[in-house]
Image (cartoon, rainbow, N blue to C red; front, side, top):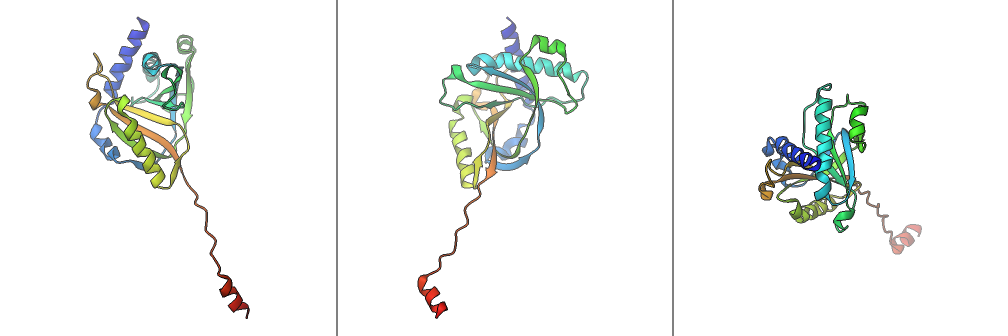
Length: 212
Protein backbone atom coordinates (compact mmCIF):
# COMPACT_ATOMS: atom_id res chain seq x y z
CA UNK A 1 0.00 0.00 0.00
CA UNK A 2 2.84 2.40 0.86
CA UNK A 3 4.40 1.85 -2.55
CA UNK A 4 1.09 2.43 -4.31
CA UNK A 5 0.54 5.67 -2.40
CA UNK A 6 4.06 6.82 -3.27
CA UNK A 7 3.47 6.01 -6.92
CA UNK A 8 0.18 7.93 -6.93
CA UNK A 9 1.91 10.90 -5.35
CA UNK A 10 4.63 10.77 -7.98
CA UNK A 11 2.06 10.60 -10.78
CA UNK A 12 0.17 13.59 -9.43
CA UNK A 13 3.28 15.71 -9.25
CA UNK A 14 4.41 14.80 -12.75
CA UNK A 15 1.15 16.25 -13.99
CA UNK A 16 1.39 19.32 -11.79
CA UNK A 17 4.90 20.23 -12.94
CA UNK A 18 3.92 20.36 -16.62
CA UNK A 19 2.62 23.92 -16.94
CA UNK A 20 3.55 26.03 -19.96
CA UNK A 21 4.88 23.48 -22.39
CA UNK A 22 5.09 25.99 -25.25
CA UNK A 23 8.07 27.66 -23.57
CA UNK A 24 10.07 24.48 -24.21
CA UNK A 25 9.18 24.17 -27.90
CA UNK A 26 12.47 25.79 -28.91
CA UNK A 27 14.14 22.56 -27.73
CA UNK A 28 12.39 20.63 -30.48
CA UNK A 29 15.68 21.36 -32.23
CA UNK A 30 18.74 20.44 -30.14
CA UNK A 31 20.53 23.30 -28.43
CA UNK A 32 23.78 23.90 -26.54
CA UNK A 33 23.63 26.41 -23.70
CA UNK A 34 25.09 27.31 -20.31
CA UNK A 35 23.23 25.97 -17.27
CA UNK A 36 23.82 27.08 -13.69
CA UNK A 37 24.44 24.63 -10.80
CA UNK A 38 21.32 23.45 -8.97
CA UNK A 39 20.85 22.19 -5.42
CA UNK A 40 18.97 18.90 -5.54
CA UNK A 41 17.19 16.56 -3.18
CA UNK A 42 18.38 13.15 -4.37
CA UNK A 43 17.21 9.55 -4.01
CA UNK A 44 19.30 6.84 -5.67
CA UNK A 45 17.67 3.47 -6.36
CA UNK A 46 18.91 0.33 -8.10
CA UNK A 47 16.62 -1.96 -10.05
CA UNK A 48 13.95 -1.82 -12.74
CA UNK A 49 12.87 1.85 -12.94
CA UNK A 50 9.25 0.76 -13.40
CA UNK A 51 9.49 -0.60 -9.86
CA UNK A 52 11.71 2.05 -8.22
CA UNK A 53 10.21 5.26 -9.59
CA UNK A 54 7.19 5.27 -7.26
CA UNK A 55 9.21 4.89 -4.07
CA UNK A 56 11.87 7.34 -5.22
CA UNK A 57 9.62 10.17 -6.37
CA UNK A 58 7.22 9.51 -3.51
CA UNK A 59 10.04 10.13 -1.01
CA UNK A 60 11.30 13.16 -2.92
CA UNK A 61 7.95 14.84 -3.33
CA UNK A 62 6.66 14.25 0.19
CA UNK A 63 9.97 15.59 1.53
CA UNK A 64 9.82 18.61 -0.78
CA UNK A 65 6.47 19.63 0.69
CA UNK A 66 7.76 19.22 4.24
CA UNK A 67 10.78 21.40 3.45
CA UNK A 68 8.58 23.95 1.70
CA UNK A 69 6.95 24.77 5.04
CA UNK A 70 10.17 26.44 6.16
CA UNK A 71 11.76 27.39 2.83
CA UNK A 72 10.51 29.69 0.09
CA UNK A 73 10.62 27.58 -3.06
CA UNK A 74 8.44 26.69 -6.01
CA UNK A 75 8.09 23.20 -7.38
CA UNK A 76 9.60 22.53 -10.78
CA UNK A 77 9.86 19.36 -12.82
CA UNK A 78 11.67 16.38 -11.28
CA UNK A 79 14.76 14.92 -12.93
CA UNK A 80 16.77 11.73 -13.07
CA UNK A 81 20.27 10.76 -14.10
CA UNK A 82 20.99 7.36 -15.57
CA UNK A 83 24.62 6.14 -15.23
CA UNK A 84 24.11 2.73 -16.88
CA UNK A 85 24.11 2.17 -20.64
CA UNK A 86 20.74 1.60 -22.27
CA UNK A 87 21.58 -2.01 -23.12
CA UNK A 88 22.01 -2.89 -19.42
CA UNK A 89 19.30 -5.31 -18.19
CA UNK A 90 16.60 -3.21 -16.57
CA UNK A 91 16.83 -4.99 -13.24
CA UNK A 92 20.43 -3.71 -13.05
CA UNK A 93 19.66 -0.07 -13.84
CA UNK A 94 20.47 2.69 -11.36
CA UNK A 95 18.23 5.75 -11.22
CA UNK A 96 19.49 8.92 -9.54
CA UNK A 97 16.15 10.64 -9.01
CA UNK A 98 16.05 14.28 -7.93
CA UNK A 99 13.91 17.30 -7.13
CA UNK A 100 15.36 20.85 -7.32
CA UNK A 101 15.25 22.67 -3.97
CA UNK A 102 16.16 26.14 -2.74
CA UNK A 103 19.77 26.99 -1.91
CA UNK A 104 18.60 27.73 1.63
CA UNK A 105 17.99 24.02 2.26
CA UNK A 106 21.16 23.12 4.18
CA UNK A 107 20.15 19.77 5.65
CA UNK A 108 17.44 17.13 5.69
CA UNK A 109 15.72 16.91 9.10
CA UNK A 110 16.48 13.77 11.09
CA UNK A 111 12.83 12.75 11.29
CA UNK A 112 12.64 12.69 7.49
CA UNK A 113 15.87 10.70 7.17
CA UNK A 114 14.58 8.17 9.65
CA UNK A 115 11.74 7.45 7.23
CA UNK A 116 13.75 7.83 4.00
CA UNK A 117 17.44 7.15 4.79
CA UNK A 118 18.40 7.10 1.09
CA UNK A 119 17.69 10.83 0.72
CA UNK A 120 20.58 13.26 0.43
CA UNK A 121 21.36 16.78 -0.73
CA UNK A 122 23.69 17.41 -3.66
CA UNK A 123 24.61 20.26 -5.95
CA UNK A 124 24.38 19.16 -9.56
CA UNK A 125 27.01 20.93 -11.61
CA UNK A 126 26.19 21.76 -15.20
CA UNK A 127 28.07 24.34 -17.27
CA UNK A 128 27.69 23.67 -21.00
CA UNK A 129 24.82 21.30 -21.74
CA UNK A 130 23.20 19.91 -24.87
CA UNK A 131 19.42 19.50 -24.66
CA UNK A 132 16.50 18.33 -26.76
CA UNK A 133 12.77 18.02 -26.11
CA UNK A 134 11.33 14.55 -26.57
CA UNK A 135 7.60 14.28 -27.15
CA UNK A 136 6.31 10.79 -26.63
CA UNK A 137 6.71 7.72 -24.49
CA UNK A 138 9.90 6.93 -22.61
CA UNK A 139 10.26 3.75 -24.66
CA UNK A 140 10.41 5.80 -27.88
CA UNK A 141 13.29 8.07 -26.80
CA UNK A 142 15.92 6.20 -28.85
CA UNK A 143 15.79 8.24 -32.09
CA UNK A 144 15.65 11.51 -30.12
CA UNK A 145 18.73 10.53 -28.12
CA UNK A 146 20.55 9.55 -31.32
CA UNK A 147 19.64 12.90 -32.87
CA UNK A 148 21.07 14.72 -29.86
CA UNK A 149 24.26 12.63 -29.94
CA UNK A 150 24.72 13.44 -33.64
CA UNK A 151 24.14 17.15 -33.00
CA UNK A 152 26.75 17.15 -30.22
CA UNK A 153 29.32 15.50 -32.49
CA UNK A 154 28.52 17.69 -35.52
CA UNK A 155 28.83 20.82 -33.36
CA UNK A 156 32.37 19.91 -32.27
CA UNK A 157 31.52 18.79 -28.73
CA UNK A 158 31.68 15.55 -26.78
CA UNK A 159 29.56 14.20 -23.93
CA UNK A 160 31.27 14.72 -20.56
CA UNK A 161 28.71 13.42 -18.06
CA UNK A 162 25.59 11.39 -17.39
CA UNK A 163 22.40 11.08 -19.41
CA UNK A 164 19.81 13.24 -17.64
CA UNK A 165 16.07 13.59 -18.11
CA UNK A 166 13.72 16.31 -16.88
CA UNK A 167 10.10 15.17 -16.70
CA UNK A 168 7.86 18.06 -17.74
CA UNK A 169 4.77 15.97 -18.35
CA UNK A 170 4.24 12.30 -17.69
CA UNK A 171 1.51 9.88 -16.57
CA UNK A 172 -1.95 11.12 -15.68
CA UNK A 173 -3.39 11.12 -12.19
CA UNK A 174 -5.47 7.99 -12.72
CA UNK A 175 -3.34 6.10 -15.20
CA UNK A 176 -0.63 6.39 -17.83
CA UNK A 177 -2.58 8.90 -19.88
CA UNK A 178 -1.45 9.29 -23.48
CA UNK A 179 2.29 8.48 -23.71
CA UNK A 180 2.42 10.26 -27.07
CA UNK A 181 1.92 13.52 -25.16
CA UNK A 182 4.66 13.08 -22.57
CA UNK A 183 7.22 15.92 -22.56
CA UNK A 184 10.78 15.07 -21.49
CA UNK A 185 13.95 17.15 -21.78
CA UNK A 186 16.96 14.95 -22.53
CA UNK A 187 20.23 16.54 -21.43
CA UNK A 188 23.99 15.89 -21.43
CA UNK A 189 26.89 17.97 -20.12
CA UNK A 190 29.31 18.61 -22.98
CA UNK A 191 32.81 19.96 -23.58
CA UNK A 192 34.30 21.49 -26.71
CA UNK A 193 36.69 19.23 -28.57
CA UNK A 194 40.14 20.79 -29.02
CA UNK A 195 41.15 19.94 -32.57
CA UNK A 196 44.90 19.47 -33.17
CA UNK A 197 46.65 22.35 -34.92
CA UNK A 198 48.05 21.23 -38.25
CA UNK A 199 51.70 22.11 -38.85
CA UNK A 200 52.38 23.87 -42.19
CA UNK A 201 53.93 21.65 -44.85
CA UNK A 202 57.20 23.06 -46.20
CA UNK A 203 58.27 21.74 -49.57
CA UNK A 204 61.91 20.63 -49.80
CA UNK A 205 62.41 22.44 -53.08
CA UNK A 206 61.30 25.72 -51.50
CA UNK A 207 63.84 25.26 -48.71
CA UNK A 208 66.64 24.56 -51.17
CA UNK A 209 65.81 27.66 -53.20
CA UNK A 210 65.83 29.76 -50.05
CA UNK A 211 69.19 28.41 -48.95
CA UNK A 212 70.69 29.10 -52.36
